[in-house]
Length: 402
Ligand code: ZN
Image (cartoon, rainbow, N blue to C red; front, top):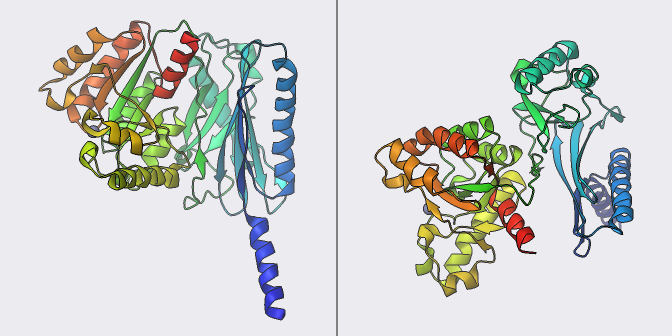
């Protein structure tokens, strides 16, 4: 009896510590909400009431709207044994499109919510530095706003403190959030960050707004991640561009930080098999094994589950379609980077062939691809295109056809 009692108490304790992701989906009103439930009442109450407040207002406004959409996603990070950081990104499309971002930082030991000044020593110096960077980057930034800027919206990961600003308030014509990454190494932190804490989930905070009339291009990179991938990410970031990376599953564990970075910076990850076998020649069982192992590896490393699939060698047949329950993505512009002998060839294979809605095939395992990339990205951007992920492109195509 005593044993059963102890087991029961253990079960209740373990049960209480379980955190979960709460998901609400309404296909009619195009509502998709997900947020973490920690079973710590103070933070759960704060998060839930914030979500409900947005959801209720949306339900009200959606009644008189033609194509309303509400999407709330989150990042969840345990900074150490005691401090949690939860950020919620709400995209609300009723009469106009709005992005709302809210950060909750909570200390389990003191049972208090923390502000940025509780986390960082000498916030004045940081504040000065941030404003300087904003003024340099966004000439149109509003001085009046800058003098009152508050740091309500931020995330922290193992490498960076990221602060977010509403473009309207910075007087910027951009529609997506403006953000700055500040390396943790340059800051004096008032709390310890435990890097061994897992990254439960980094969903795209840096989602962009795309209008139906925008000219868009989706760059895709196959066969990574590799030692070159971070350089590709650097270039994308420099030009406010995002891309889709079709990764090979067996490399995922080794480059998990690169994958987290991809998502954090607004890129998308797709499935390109586990070991890059020629899938059309495998048995159904072997195909499923290749796909599922990759899905699991990505989910384990980042918390993200891909929805897109690029067949190895671009080969597809009925059997493959039968055994892969993901959206197949091909391309219309082939960089042929793997057989190019210089950067000019890659440039010429891509830039003159770009059309509105193009999907470009590249590989982030080639030195020459990285070397040619900046010129390509810059030119396409100068030609008036926005770089979107494949899922954003699909959504836009759907919108245009409806
Ligand atoms: Zn490939």
